[in-house]
Image: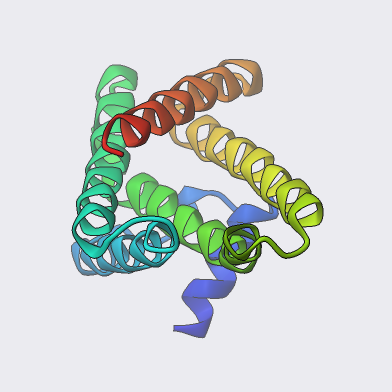
Length: 163
């Protein structure tokens, strides 16, 4: 387990890519569950359990759907488990780091500092997603960051519609 967390953290630090993860259905399923749980914790800070669960499940479906569509369009579907596992795992890891900041903002303590930290984590999430896309699809860094931006913007919009 520690090896997996370290590998996901190395992906977040741009030292490794999704190709360094094993292509495993079991790992993919496990990280879907972990991602849903971390998202549930994050969303439940501001919503009831039903909407938190709904948004967490929709978020996981968006990640999986985006991974599949991006790889399908790139004609690299064989990389699905590795890429989507990387997207799910890094999203869960960065969201886990954002939990204290979001909790502070919800309680009204250190709001400015929490906002700055949360904004920095969102930018980090964007660049990590671009890094994963670049490694998985073989596209340029600029294209990958643009696609990551569009994906994240769309997913934030879908989450806002569910509120």
